[in-house]
Every structure is written in structure tokens, then in C-alpha cells.
Image (cartoon, rainbow, N blue to C red; front, side):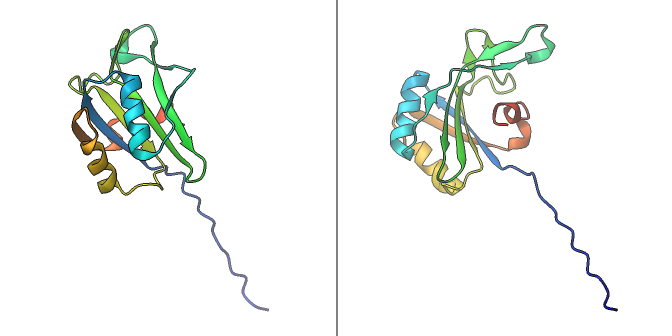
Length: 142
């Protein structure tokens, strides 16, 4: 009798995400429009809010954001203003105006994405952050 072969199916639930810090004096809707034009996206203001509890606060703080899901490439894009009326989204980086998050990026190479971001009129600087530094963004993009 032949020996039975065993196969193990391993499914990685690793989702990739890229986080860019953007310095810009533009209002959130204007920056979303610029990103839409540059990358051919359709970032729109979400009806939902993202709530976090910053610095062990008692209350949840709501944050508005813009989002877009590219159904063809299965890529999600998010634009989050760091400083909003209720507080700072990521207090460890207070000089950053916005966070541009790309989850499951099958659309753009990271270098090309950075280069295009830096060429957008109105963006002063773009910073590439390791996604591990932004564990709270995982809740937004899940």
C-alpha cells in the first residue's frame, strides 16, 4: 500500500499597508481632491467616524476620514487629518498634518507612489512610516 501524502494549507492573513505622513496647508477636502486627480481615485468623506481613546482618556474621540476602495485592484485608500477638533489622531507625530494609508497596495509601487505624492501641488513634505508604528490604523482598515 502506498504511503499517504499529507499537505498543509497555510493561509497568511497578513495584510500589507503603507502609511505616509503628509505635510500640507490644504484643507482635507482639497487634499483629497488633489490625491484623486493624481492617482485617479475617488476619495470621499466617510459617513462613519473612527473612534480611538488617545493617551488613556476616558472618552472615545471621533475622527473623520476620507476613503476609497478600488474594486479592480482590491486596494483601500484612506486620508486622515491628524489634528481635528477633538484631538490629535497620532500624538507621537504632531507635526504631520495628514496620514495617507494604502492597504493591500496592488496599484502602485511604493517608490512611484512617494514620488507622485511629493510632486502634488500644495504638499510640502511626505514621510514614509513603518506600518508597525501605527497599530491604531489597523482598526480603521479592518
